[in-house]
Length: 238
Image 1 (cartoon, helix red, strand yellow):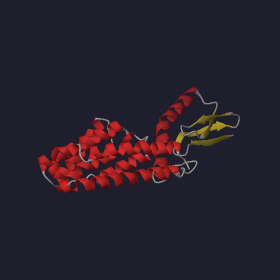
Image 2 (cartoon, helix red, strand yellow; image 1 turned 180 degrees about the horizontal axis):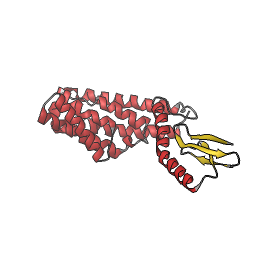
Image 3 (cartoon, rainbow, N blue to C red; image 1 turned 90 degrees about the vertical axis):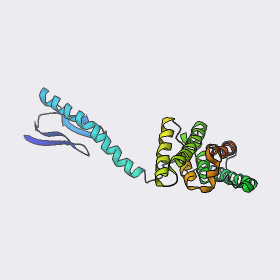
Image 4 (cartoon, helix red, strand yellow; image 1 turned 60 degrees about the horizontal axis):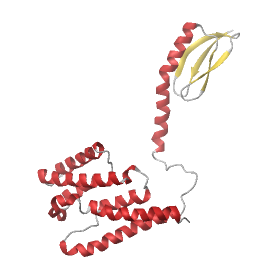
């Protein structure tokens, strides 16, 4: 008795329809996505070679299709975790952010007579990186200070050459991205420093001092607070 058999995985036909006899025994082939596929065990040499070639040719496309399909939806879902974080892992980073902004605000009161401020929006993003994700690449001290100083200087340079406007902002941001990638110092909050300088008239008086103040100077304070937050998270849990 002859019949036709299609060999399939979830995404593609791996082998063409094949005639076989009821006297034939069967073996099992594996697709790249680990689904089990029934195949003929007693194919001729030529058919076996063709089968192996077609299976190999489909492996990568099948694997990539499965990963892409899962990845599209995974990006819209929260990270899977076996349990919720302890309350202390929420309280201490939040308390650190409060302390950081309070201290920066107090420094602002001292510097008010000079018309400058330490409290800038990028430092809020730095707090989130340092206190909530201290093990991430963006929280590394090298990344933070290299990016803060370099991106701020790029902002001043772009404003000096191109003046205010969309061209200066676009050029400064693209140059800042290239700088962080080239120096392996990607620190996302630093990308906003060039835009802040170009659009902030009160910062123009700082000129190239802006590379150190207020971004890099503020990060020194935040690093000190981060050490306290990390100590409390490790030793005072509830």
